[in-house]
Length: 291
Image (cartoon, rainbow, N blue to C red; front, side, top):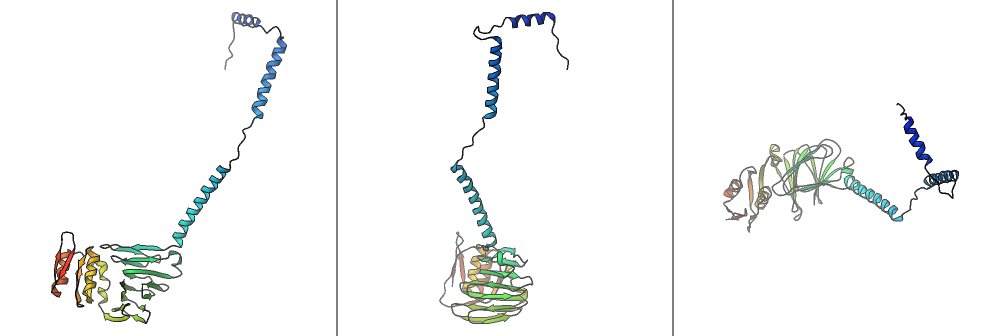
C-alpha cells in the first residue's frame, strides 16, 4: 500500500494549528499529557478487572431438575407399557381384523372380538386371551395356548378356530391336534372334530365337520350344523351391524349357510325361509323376526 505524502503547504498548516492549541494555565503541557496517560491506564484496568458475576438461583436449578425428572418419568412409562403391558386387538360389529403374532403365527379376529397378549413374555410363553372368535394358524414351536373365560386350548403347531361368547365355547380342529381344557375335563380333538362347552350348564357336546370348511368365515362364508337359531341371528347381527328382534318359547336349531358378502335380505331369506319365519327390515336397519 502506498503511503500518502503531504505537501509543504499542508505541513505548515498542521504545525500552525498545533502551535495554536492551549493548555489551561494551571496545568503544564507535561502535566496534561501525564494526566491523560493515567486516565487511559485506569480505564484499561477497569475494563479487564471487571467480570460478570453469575447469580445462583434455586428456582432455576429446581426447574431444570424437574424437567429432567419429567422426561425420565415419561420415558419409563412408555418403556413399561411397551414391554410389560398387554398388546390388544379389538374389532367392532361388521369388522374383521388380520394380524401376525411375534412368532409369525397368523390370527384373524371375527366381528365383536378381542385378543390380548403380553409381548415381554411371548417367547417364554406363547399365550393369548380371547373374547369372541378367532381363527389361528400357529407356527411350530413351544406350546401355544388360547385362554377364554371358561376354557383353555393348547397346541404345538396347527390350525384351529375358537369361539367364546356368553359362556358358550366352541373349538374346531382343522389340522394337527388340539387339547381343550375345561374345569371338569380335558379332551384332545383331531382334524374334523369339534366340541362345544356350555359353562352355565356345565355340559359338553361334540360334532364333526368338513375340515376344508373349518374357519371358512375368514372368507366371508358361515356354515352352521345344528346351531341354536339365536346364535345364527347373533352372528348376522355382528356381521351386518344390525339389531335383530327375535324371541321364541322353544329352542330351535339351524343347519345351513350364508355369505356375508351378499345383501342382508338374501342372508335373511336363506335363514328364515327354511325355518318358516318372516322378517321385516325397517328404514333404520332394525330387523324384526316373526312366525
